[in-house]
Image (cartoon, rainbow, N blue to C red; front, side, top):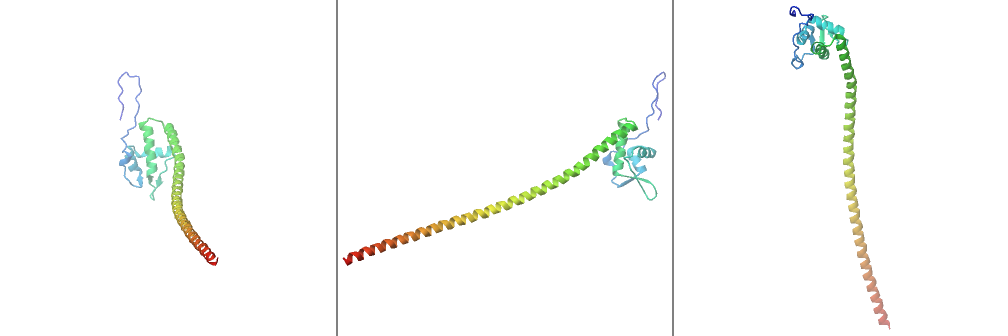
Length: 190
């Protein structure tokens, strides 16, 4: 579409790319692979632009079909949508977009291992917490068993003490009776 410049204007006409709006990512088909024409339609560009971006940005790696057609998986398609945004919406140059996309990919590459490490650490912490809860339950059961044993031992000691006291009282009564018998037999012999 030609740009109209008023007569006498000192500005040079700027050719803007004939770009349609991209279809929002949430409205994209859920297919595993998109053909280049389908992807170009979703991005709002022509197929040669998708090929050019694929050549210019090494981060985009399409697959080939058995008939040698370019097929784009979801990650590659999302990268191309990001490239489209950098070039057409943010007005970056190819070099600027390459740099911005590279920084974005580096951050993602750094974040992914951290995410995996964090997930692994979270699993380890959850396992340790589960083990700790098990140990705490066993300790509580052991304490309850120990308390029951201590209670039984205390009851046994109390019973033994009562038996000992009863025996001592019985013995004392017998000794007292024996002493009384001795006194009475000593009094009879005099």
